[in-house]
Image (cartoon, rainbow, N blue to C red; front, side, top):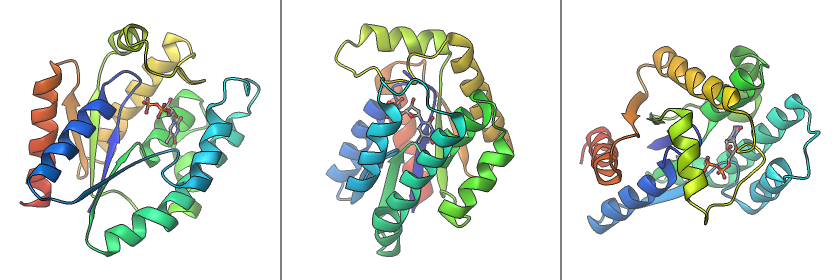
Length: 206
Ligand code: TYD
C-alpha cells in the first residue's frame, strides 16, 4: 500500500507521521517512511536545487518539472519496488503537493500539472492520502515558533500563497474523495497522532 501525507506548511504532518510510524513499527507492522521531494540520493540532489533560497528566480514550470523529475526517480528507485514486495510505504508529500503548490498557488493550473505529472507517475495514485488541514496563519506561526526547523524557499512566500495552497488541497480532497481523508491538524498533537494512526490502521485492515 502507498499512503501519502499532504498539507500546508506548519501542519505538523511530518512530526505526527513519525509518531504514527513508530507506533505501527512497535506493533510489528513494517512501514517505510519516505519524503518528497527526495527519498533517494538523486531525488535529494534535485530537492537541494528546488529548495535552495538562492534560486529566487526559478521559473514556475521549471519548478514543476523538477518536482516531477524527483518524483519519477523516487517512484522507480524506491516506492514501486517496495510496494511490489507488499510493504506499506508512507510518503511525506507526493503528487498532490505539486497540484496544490504549482497547479494552484503558482497558477499553472491543476489539470496542466496533473497532465505533466502523468509522464512521471504513469498514472499511479496513492491508495490513501491524509490531508493535514490547518489555517495558514496557525501553520506559519508554528514554524516561526519552531526555531529548529529549516526555513525553505517556499516558506518565504506571502500569506495569500499559503491560503491558495490550503484551498487547493481542500478542492483536491473533494475531487479525489475515494483516497482522501481530511484531518483537522489544529487539534492537540496527541489527538492528531491518534486520528492518523486509526485511519491508516483501518485502511490496511490490520
Ligand atoms: P519541506 O521542507 O519538506 O516542507 P514540509 O515540511 O512543509 O513538507 O519542503 C517541501 C516544500 O516543497 C514544501 O514547501 C512544499 C513544496 N512542494 C511543492 O511545492 N511541490 C511538490 O510537488 C512537493 C512534493 C513539495
